[in-house]
Amino acid sequence: MPIQPEQLAALMAEVEQEDPIDFADLPFPEHELRLLVAGHLCEMAASMENFSAEDRLMTLLAVSAKLVLENLVLHVQLLRRHGLPVGDNVEALLSRLRKPDGG
Image 1 (cartoon, rainbow, N blue to C red):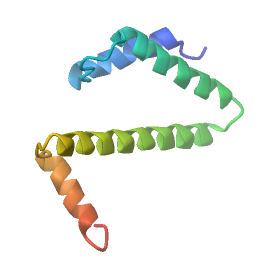
Image 2 (image 1 turned 45 degrees about the vertical axis):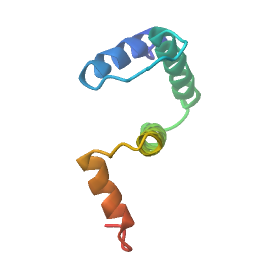
Image 3 (image 1 turned 60 degrees about the horizontal axis):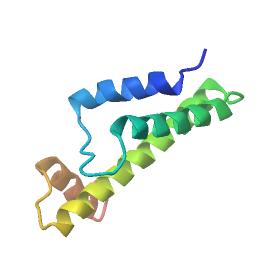
Image 4 (image 1 turned 180 degrees about the horizontal axis):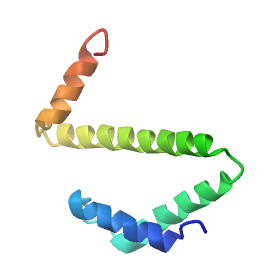
């Protein structure tokens, strides 16, 4: 039986205990935002039911990687907009990316 959006939202909340999301002053309840995202991901997973296990994994990894990249870009943009320094780990990553060989 595939995971239900409510179950996925609960897992998301558990993961957030270790790495909380700053919802700031968004005019939406956090739980509803989690359910919205969880529902979308459950629909995406269901649409891949005819994919091989390897293709599902690759697709979900690609989606996850895109979201992590988007989060990094938004985070750095926000810090720069407010004139704040990026953390050491982000600065190290950006320094590697600035090198001509990329690593």
